[in-house]
Image (cartoon, helix red, strand yellow):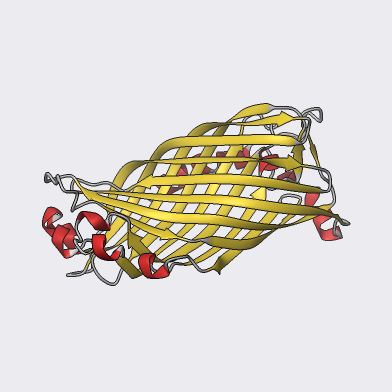
Length: 351
């Protein structure tokens, strides 16, 4: 790809940065908590799964379909918010029940978000280590006796992602009132959403993803032990905040769109150095509900992030699911002088 094409893609992805207008909003619709430093504690249930199946041969027994799951029983973390800045991190805090049955999963997550209600930039890194195959009973005759799933303790999945969201009705709709809660939506409102994503996703194992009994269905992909994908997408969607009594709220957001992917497949018999280009589909669905008061907030949020990596032999779907329960408290603070100077810049006023 030429430099010119890269510049065009980046310009298309981040074009809202170039828009110039005042950041005024309808104060009858939402308000901002000024000079507030927010500390939040959250607990969440998270899972990452990869569904793998072949499309070339008939398989009535389902011996060539696999659903690899990395599942955490309980994750704890902290979130810090001030004005346009949000930082969050979490680690697995409670061992999963029946580890002998499902195996052990290690998890790490780090996020940094920046922006306002006109546009918002999310960046995150998460990593899972340790998977099991939910479809083990289809091909392992010992499963009925032992109840132990096929485990892949050395399989790891890591995802670094940057997501850009632009809201057309930012003067009446406050996206951050439903998640970071440094705004408070007073009356119900909705908005169209323009979204762009750039990410690098890697899933790697020390042996083939495909068990020996199923490799005959996959041709040379029977030796597949890694997939590395760089993706760039442009999505379109809709979002709304439903508000009751100026405090109770329900948020929903969904986007979908085309995605350009550059993939590299690794085989146990050889390390493929060839990059394949594909056009696929990606989507983002999230929701939150809770109580947003002047001093504190309580919320539950739900996120599904799905991407397909299909070719002429293998259908490969990657799905991330997160359920979060968050309690946050607002502390009154003075704005640092250096930050006040930043607030006077043209860049800040475009947020």
